[in-house]
Length: 335
Image 1 (spheres, one colour):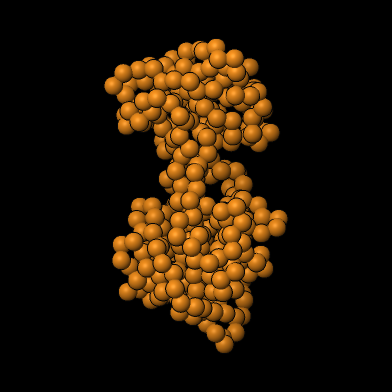
Image 2 (spheres, rainbow, N blue to C red; image 1 turned 135 degrees about the vertical axis):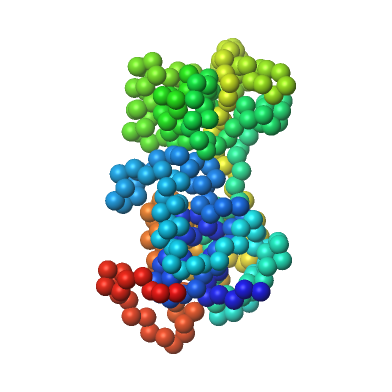
């Protein structure tokens, strides 16, 4: 049994920063996450991927961002319940009861959902024998270390930001990078799409357009080539050691969807003034939250963490006036 002020479900960037914002208001937090480490997608999917829109950091890797957030919340010593999924939520503002799939019981005055877009997994291409190549690492959906692909022949499939970003990040590491997409126009940001075109024109990588994945060639999980097909069914062989399909993530809210909070297209509706959901005392921030004008940026999740912390203070400390002070004047409170 754990008693706390705020139960934070999700330990990605927004959830971690919420610990800091709550801590600055002297609210105790517990972090709960289904993954075995904090950081959410930043840690699990792309720790070496550079992020360019964090204030005061012209560029910072996702892994380094998580490390800095961990250092920032260290003074507040928030317990972490990892490899846990919250299965049940009962109670009301001031005394919520949460239970995890590992049997943990948590009593919290308020609940903050910061679970990204829920549990996630890759959208897998429908290719024969895919599992065998996945088991050997010949097919991978995430890049945790660029150096793992040094000197390798890489085929990247997809047309979004992940495909374009990793093609640019790996072109100077891999022996060769081929990008397969079914149309000439990419869905990535205009700047990175232009960088991709420039790299292709300079011979730094190959754009295989318009093609789509057709077959994996090799034996015993060892990839030899990726066969692609154009819109007329004509095939082409791309020599490869690894295939990296970036077709997005399949998201699942899980039990959260059964708690009675209002949903919109698998996202939790919140009041942007407080980040409170339709269920009093339950708040949501980050990618899982939606409202008019919402931007899916880590930066926005940080802002929402501050908004939610101030709104939750009234529930966790009823009747206690909140005298807001800037961190430069008050410092970090002692735990």
